[in-house]
Image (cartoon, rainbow, N blue to C red; front, top):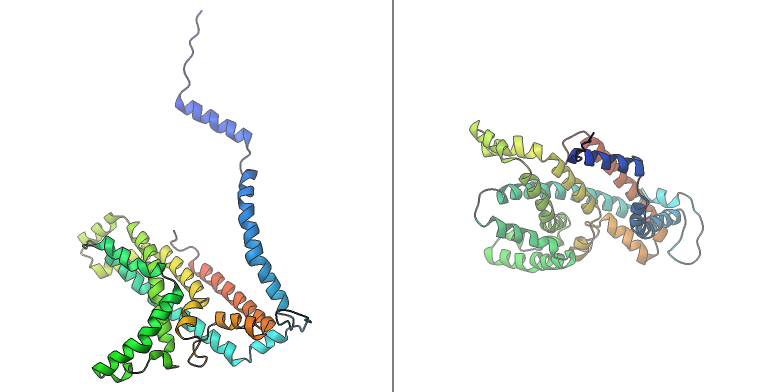
Length: 311
C-alpha cells in the first residue's frame, strides 16, 4: 500500500520556525550581544556626564575653588544663592527668555511649515533656504547680528530719522533681551520647522478633502485638524526648545556678554564664571539647583502630555 506525502505549506514552515525560535530563546530574554553594543555608549555617558555631575554635586557642599585644599561647609553655598542678586537675576532672565522664545519659535515654525507644505511654487528650494540658519555656528550668528544691531540699524535710523533706532538695542538694559530672543529664534526655527513639516506630511490628505467638502476654511482646518493631529510634534518641539533655551550661552556671550550690566546674564553664564573667578563650589551648588529645577519641569511636561495624542 503506497503512502503519499504532501509538501509542507508556507504556513506550516513559518509556524515550525517560530516554535523552534521560541524553544531556542525564551520570550522576554534579551540576547547578550545587545548589551555589548550598549556597553561602550553607557561607559562614555557615565564618564562624560554622570561622573562629572556627581563630582560637582559633591564639591557643592565644600569651599573648593576648583583646586587645592577644601573642606565641607554644608549647605552654606545653597543658602547664599537665595540672597545673591546676580543669581536671582540670571534665573529670572533665563526662564523669561526661554518662555518667550519657545512661543515665538513654535508659532513661526508652524506657520512656515503650513506654507511650505501647501501647493506653492518653489517650495523645495524655499525649504532649503529656511534650513540654512540651523547649520551655522551660534557664535558666528551672534557676531553678525551684533554688527547689525550696533552699526547697520543705528545708521539706518539716523538716515531715516527714526529716533528709537539711532541707538543700538544692545546698549539698552530693558531691550537687549529682545535682540537675544530674535537671534536665538532665527537659529532655532529651522529645526522646529523640519519637525512640523514631517508632522503635516503624516496627516492623510483625505482629512483635508473632507473638510473642504464640509466648507471648512483654511484657518478652521489649521486650528481643528492640523494642530490637534500634530500635538505629539508640538510637544517634542516645546520640550526640546525649552531644554535648549534654558542652557543658552553661545548667542548671549557673543551678542551682549551678559550686559548691559548683568541684565542678560543667563544661568549657564553664571555657572561657567565659577571656573574662572574661584567660585567653583558656589557655582556647583547653583548648577545643582538648576538641574533639580529642570528635572521638575521635565516631569511636569510629561505629566501634562501623558495620555494625549503622541507620535
